[in-house]
View 1 (cartoon, rainbow, N blue to C red):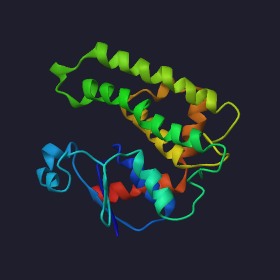
View 2: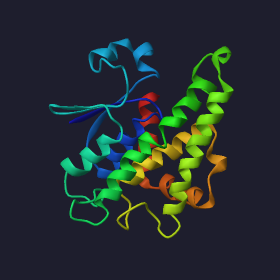
View 3: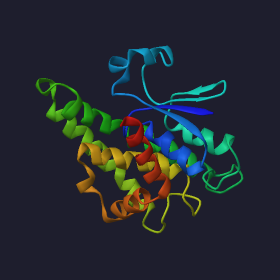
View 4: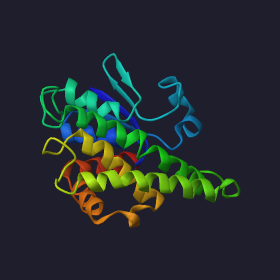
Length: 208
């Protein structure tokens, strides 16, 4: 059975949501954040101490944007993947990686210097600058959604999972009030999906 090591609403939520969208059986391990300090036994599983860690037989993965792609292409034929013969294959890959590298990364700086560090180490200038970085790049999502419901291929795909997590993180760091109408409506569609709600429920049950 697939195993996922996860922290509440962290990057690993992408993998959890993807598992629910695929309807795959999995065993969930919910860890305190950051696990490298609060669950040191986890280092035996992942010496980096980061999450996610997905274990599927001999396969072990720790990159949150790669895991949805892996699940969609390794575990069945699913419309959540975009095939190499489809016109939007490149666009799909681009959105998958943009969701992490371009839209999630700057928010981690905001999160660190407004919430995670002791208050005496908060750096308002860094948080403000990286918040603006995120918001300026979020405009590309607004443009993409001007004439479509989902990001590519005319359907919901794992690209929407990867970008959708960045919007979830924006709620965590308090940037969601700056969403454009298009992004706000997109977030409403994403967060109403049964698999999104199931992933939220799964992490809460395990944490309890």
